[in-house]
Image (tube, rainbow, N blue to C red):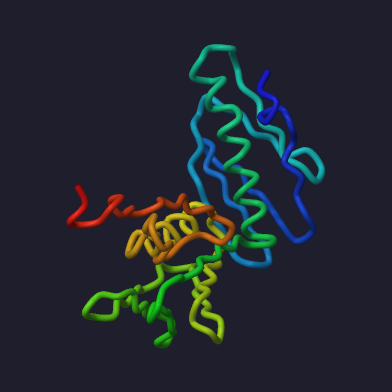
Length: 187
């Protein structure tokens, strides 16, 4: 039995789960509403203030879907109740970010600023130094995807660490060039 799959998903106050036809699940909470179509091989039932996820058989596909379904459902519940946040840090001389309305504008050493338009349900926030970008939303996958796209604009380079990286990410550094012993005219 899947250790993750057999744990029930607790429902905080103010969160409602509606399980519809064909495992169409809608989760509504104080931050918004999320919907997802889950596989028919997995059964979900709401018991009191929690949702239990079960599978019909022990074949490999259903074992794989069991934990995945429970994790996705739990992320939906957490998203509509508390939301998700991803923080990016910008390193480098002249590298910075700013807001233009709801859009994020990043200056990362290119000849032009790059404007990033947030998808629905995503909000950007830049600190006053312009070196830290906070991405918030209720869908964990969309928040992570947006953070990855911003990081890919200028990923951190290994020599000086310049670029955009996640908060807490350790950028592996390389030593760089070393001079030859003796110099140019040595014999």
